[in-house]
Length: 496
Image (cartoon, rainbow, N blue to C red; front, side):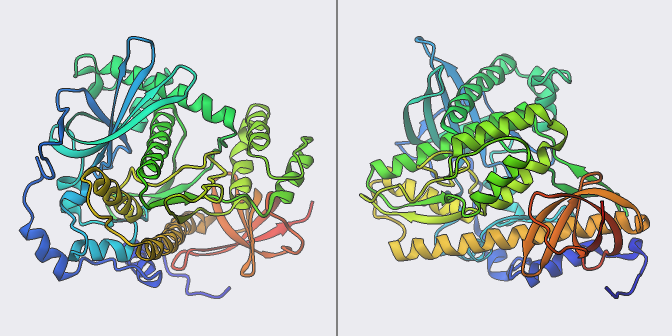
């Protein structure tokens, strides 16, 4: 590989991210028409409220998200019922109240399809004025929301569910890091919880409900995977100083289980009402034989035909047997399962083709992140049309086009985010050329064979000795070269 080896410190990473967005077909800059519409919008305290909207501002709602996140899509509340069940409410930001279908803001959001998180800069699907303020469930403010209410039994069964509009108040903006450390007995109670009477009891009740939901999903064969994604951390001078890895904890598990349950309930609500719906699908894996082979190499047996329950049991065993390498195994399985996609579910049709293999569910939509994903905003409009007993906002053909475009845009976003992770990694690895690392093969495409070294978690292409390598194979590689400008990292396989 030939390149101009300029000093990494002189790289303009923000400019590289911007160009990556353009190259991937995104519109990274806010169009003038969107800015003009923004100036005409009113404050959203009671936007979308009417006589059918419940006032639930007295409930102890809270949000849990990344520490730096301000585009808050959901809040949660749990209540113990007399019979021992737990009523879980998930409030979703009423983005549609301010982002009207067919408006300039909506058209721009539809074109990009999703927010993109490059680590260097966030490119929001909606302008910051909306996504981090006016349509965000920010702490200490009243907001309009669409609530999914679920009665969760001790065995994790959702005995009943309902969907309705409400006014909410977020009493505590919490972070995964602080809440997770507290729930896992690795840190003190967060001050945002300690400062609100009874909030500690509220969060622990939410956690109990989430654990019940998780246990039932486990029994049904939901896959519990753990991957390592390292994002660049920059100092005030715009220089990459380290790679940050998101660590799994109980707070992330809590929100994941609530969001899955809410998305299932929303899909079932639309189906029960005879409405069109978007479904998020991960089909039965075509590369199952390779997954079976990986299991066999580890001394385990999987059935010849795809079986999510058997795969879930195998993964649970490996997490216990070899926790250090479990993220590497997870990454291989994820690559072999293949990406998800959006499809359209029409009234009266079977849901057998709309399975989400990884979650072991048939009814699954995306509805819980309307500030960040256009599919979720479209789902919100479908739900609100049912609630208001109005005409559907989209024809089947229009919704099918949205599904295809959102699938393509989310794939493009992952590529941009992956490139910027590689740019950051290449900056840090420049001075380690010639070193040898343990690695795992993560991809085999017509463009080449790719691997991720274990420590630090850095991805690159194998340029030497790549013949015959397969996804999931553990190898040793030497770092041959880096190109921070293009995010290229080249490895050579080291013979055993």
